[in-house]
Length: 214
Ligand code: FES
Ligand code: FES
View (spheres, rainbow, N blue to C red):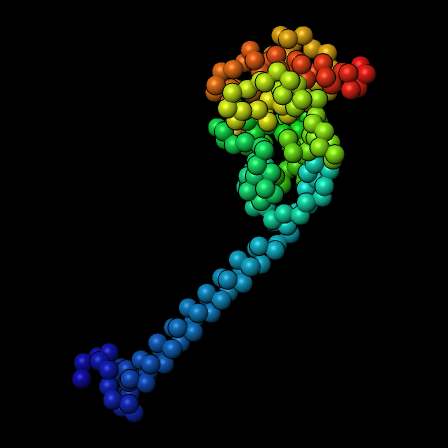
């Protein structure tokens, strides 16, 4: 019999492999590979809960409410707001910090929510268009200004403009038309209805000063 040829059971010599030897070696190999698999899985599991890894279940302060939500570490705020919390008033336009449709306030400052990681704003107050009106349904003065002047065409960009204006007016409550235009120049309207939009937002600023007695 040639060297390494499989021999009948019980006829194994130092230079020959019996069927029993082959079966034992196959079982041993399987045990080794499954053991390494198990170790690999436990290693991955250990990594997921290792110190420094990101806890996915977090609490966000959105429109004055504490909202528990499961957030991936690479998730942007606009995705969390729209698709996890159902706050679809925040629009997703370019998704690359160019159009302003996704604007929300973070601690009263306008931000593009498509370019902010949700995990990064866990300690901030998030305000979206849904949080502007009073609980009794009374519209925010800026929203009322839009109704007063019938601003916007398709209105896809509207919530972004409104949030940007609300944020800007916190720093300048009585802007000129050109100051407001400059203040919200990070927002684009694909219907290019800028003149009417500005008229509506200036009217909104006037409404706000009346409400605040400024
Ligand atoms: S969708 Fe965020 S800036 Fe356009
Ligand atoms: S009114 Fe249509 S995008 Fe601005």
